[in-house]
Amino acid sequence: MNPKSIISKLHHWIGTSLQRKLVLAIGLMLATMSLVFLVILGSVYKDRLVNDHTRASMQINRLLQASLENAMLKRDIPGLKAILRDMGDQPSIARIMILNPDYKVRFSSDPARIDTVLKEDITTRALTTVSRQSRYLQSAQFGEVLRSVNPVRNQQPCSVCHGEIATHPVNGLLVVDYDAQSIRRDATRSVLILGALGVLVVLAVCVGIWFALVRLVIRPLDAVEQATHALADGQFDTVVQTRGHDQIARLSHSFNRMSERLRLAMAQHQQIEDFLQGLIDAIPDGIRVIDANFNIIKANRAYCEQVGQPMDQVLGMKCFHSSHERDTQCPHTLVNCPVVETCLNSNKRLTTQDKHMDGNGNDIYVEVSSARVDMVVNGVSRPCVVESIRNLDEQAKISQQQRLSEIGLLAAGVAHEIYNPLSSIDLGLTALQSGMNAEAGFDTPDYFDLIRSEIQNCIKITDSLLLLSAPPGDTKSLISLTEILPNIISLLRYEALQRNVEIAFDFTGPVRILGSDSDIRMLLVNLTMNAIHAMPQGGLLTIAVYRDKGESMLQVIDHGVGIAPGDLDNIFMPFWSRRADTSTGRGLGLSIVKAILERNNAKISVKSKLGKGSTFTVRFVDADREE
Image (cartoon, rainbow, N blue to C red; front, top):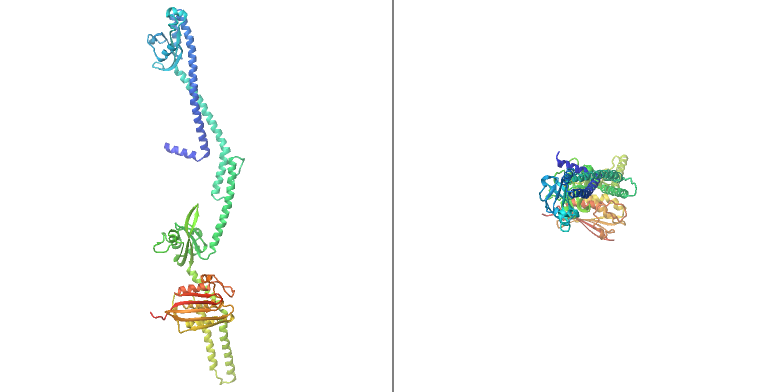
């Protein structure tokens, strides 16, 4: 196996455990300290051992010197040589030499050294200072030696041969070379023994620290680590069992407090999240929040139903893939992309019409109202866009339902209008039957004319009601306002009578427009009903139709309570209602009027004074205008 790979695996194995790292660090520290102490102790011990050998050599030198002096005094030269030879054969002594004051070797255990001159720094210093000298030297014959030089002092018995003591204080030099390798070996052996003992001590300390760390540090920290992993996995009720009052115990207590606070914070966050989700789910229009990278980060149930996708699939999906089934971003140069316009181009609001895809791959036409919001995530502000997506197809259905609801309010008036003709028909038939039974020549044409006329009235009312209830369409037809107004008013006459409202017409000739017949009828009903409700005490309601400069004008004038100036901008908003007669309204009448006018390319304006009444003026394109 590659050494680098082994080292890398070993480094990874050590780095994954605090226990191993601590034991390794402490072991290395102890080993380093032991090595330093071993070097210092070995050096001191070696020097001490050398000094001991030096002192021992000095004692041997004294003994040898005494023996040599005794032999020299007796002039026992053979005995002197024998002593030198015997001492030179000792294992620890390499060589013994006796030098005269001229540094010439006179006697030696090594015959090859006799008559050689041994003038060295150590011998010179010993002769000059008349003191013992010792030094380690390298010898070509014996290797490293400990050379001990002892001056042989001149004594009174020796002065006969060597001269006066004052002029010749030293008779010669005794040089003893000790084998230093044995000394070094002893010192090295002792140092190695001390090193081995130090290693055993370090290992024993590491093992002890290992077990102490496992019990006092590693196991409690493992418990904290496992609790941390559990907390990271979402188990916010995790607690750590604590023992004692040391730092780790305090750490465990702090972790438990943090876990409890985090659990409460997450529960509160989940409540807020659920409330927010429930809030946007209650909105009937589709809602989605998109970040600057086109990712959907929030959506409501209505949007999921629009696109036919589950919530978990919508969240995180690209907006263009979710609503347009595209794999790439919509070309913002061709369409008004809310993300590009609001997030990237810093526009605050945008309303556009677009075409989305439902779950079955069918097109749905929507109106998208978007606004920019800045969300703070991890301390960083991120621009996002909130889209409110209204399904225009559903809006059309709701509008039609509102039509039918408004028609239901006319049921009493319709019933009253039909009831009178039916009563006349019944009376005519009764009289006709009685006259026919009384005499054969009874004149019947007048009764038949009455019956036919009342039947035609019922048919007109029914036709008007059917046209009013028809759904809006894109087909435009030629409509005479002066002809359909009486039909519409006939449906509202009963409601007006009940509220003491008199309806008057002001026509200046035929006025025709192009539009949707059902739309225009619903427009007239809503404007008239709005005027009736504005006069809770009754009064005069005037409906005027005339032509003016290429436009067909429709005015609905009431003398009711009027509209406050601050409310004029709100009256066409959906679900906004301020009925003067305190009756409950849905607030959709004038919003439907506005939608009808937009579909039929018409405009409306309002003039009102509190306590004086209001005038609603509708401007259509005159169908009979000259091009």
